[in-house]
Image (cartoon, rainbow, N blue to C red; front, side, top):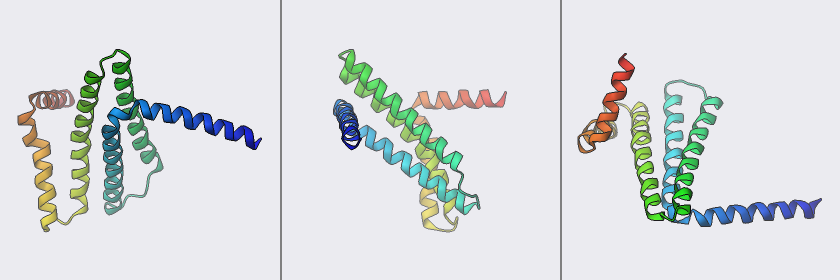
Length: 158
């Protein structure tokens, strides 16, 4: 039985090594996503604690599920692009998805960080300013983002 388990472990390790080797060109994007998701989880956890919320396992599982969706999306984009022999385009597309993820999760991280800080501190002012830049000023530099957010606001007001 033990030898059989070793064989399964070896097969799984070989399979995962092959996939990770294939995804090596987007390794930086994958690690960036891991970092962003961990940072978002930690910021949300501590902001909830400060607001007096109890740890919610369902909310934590939902956070991990969302992360896996994005890992699957990014991995799929890259693999399809590579299979189509358009690796450079796939890497550019993956990079775009990761930058969008950084924007939306980054604003959420900053919002949660603001909840953790005392408003009379310099740290709060720095985070509040960064949140302002990311939430409002960057929209002026990326017209498609402004159009998207405006459209979503109109849909929500109906």
